[in-house]
Image 1: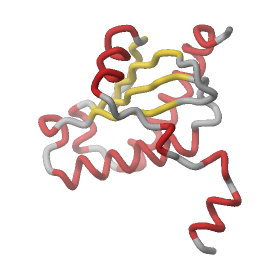
Image 2: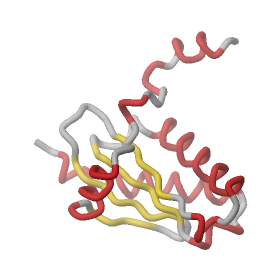
Image 3: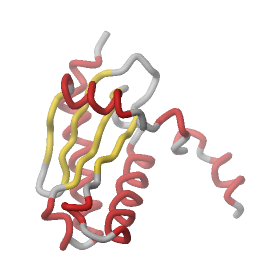
Length: 131
């Protein structure tokens, strides 16, 4: 199956540019006013948005992960996990940060940790998104 056919089959699971947080001002605003959550490997800052879905930003520091290969691997894991779980997350702007303990963790443990974090975000931030 081609990539185009796959993306047409599941339009709600794509990760388009509109779902990404990239501007430094947006990061600063979410860090300042957002709700902080976390677990063993990741931190999350979440703030309600006026859009119809969640948006994702990532903060993976050199000091935390080391090599570019390790940083990019974690970014791919975060993006894929968000893409698969974005329908369960309320309309929030979310910045995911990586803790130093993630450096030596296996991929399966990181994925499980992200799954738990999305559930935690959905439960604890649902009230703040009600309009």
